Image (tube, rainbow, N blue to C red; front, side, top):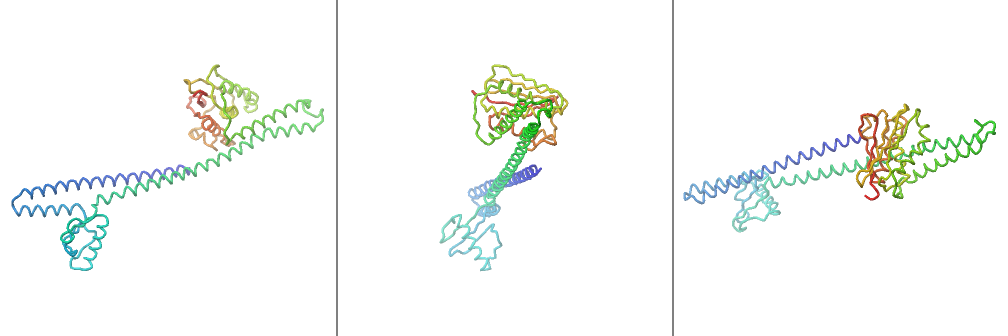
Length: 392
């Protein structure tokens, strides 16, 4: 919610600055066009005065030119010998030619104009001091607008950095909880086996022998080792090798065949359709199996304990990609979480940590350079995973 509010505020600010920039740009263009028209009009008046032989017509043309110059908004000060004020136009203050203070103010303004533009004419006779036209002075506004846009981008980057940092903290928190959850099951099982070992043989249920208990303990220890090895690879550069997609999926099927009956309340069929001879992919077997297992477990949750079918379908896409689709016949994904289902901490289960699919995306996209996405389906849910081939 906070991210949405920040994004909306920044988008509004950006649109306001963009509108401001367009408005003033249009205003500058309009002023330039007006000055171009005035220059053309000035040229016409001068041409008429030059071609006319009548003194009155020439005088009128000069007066008209002077008025056109005033209309351009160009600050002008005409000075004579000893810097006497002869004429002025478009000054940013009122001038009283009878006041010595006002004359001094004009001379001070002359120094300001001369700092950017050299005067025109003979300083010992008649010289003209001038400044920038309003259209030229307003050109500084786009720089202010650019600064505003840059500030918007900087603020946006800061917000995104803060959001990614918070997202990372949520991911690590969810992962820590997931680790504790996964470790809790085999640890509880080991504790139970330990209690059984303390009982005399006749008191054990089903006359369990020490060898049976040792076998079960070995399975739990293997599971603990698998879990620790998986989390050990997080944050490290894993070893990559050329993998058979069919081999990985069949290993996953064998691993889940024992666990699905415990995870699902009713019968769930796991169907695998991966043909032989498919291109190999470059990957890490442990991490890739973990990513696929998380997606399958998500499918199990979607079945909501009512039984059904989960299918893993794989095909080659050209020579550079291998596509896997994991489909379940469950109730589908809640529309409220569909767009953010791969984000850490997002889960449709009340007891879930929301780390499984987020971790799968990190493994598939970050480690293997692939792509995972949720596809729309008329019945159930389908996840598609695209992996680059080893020769790509």
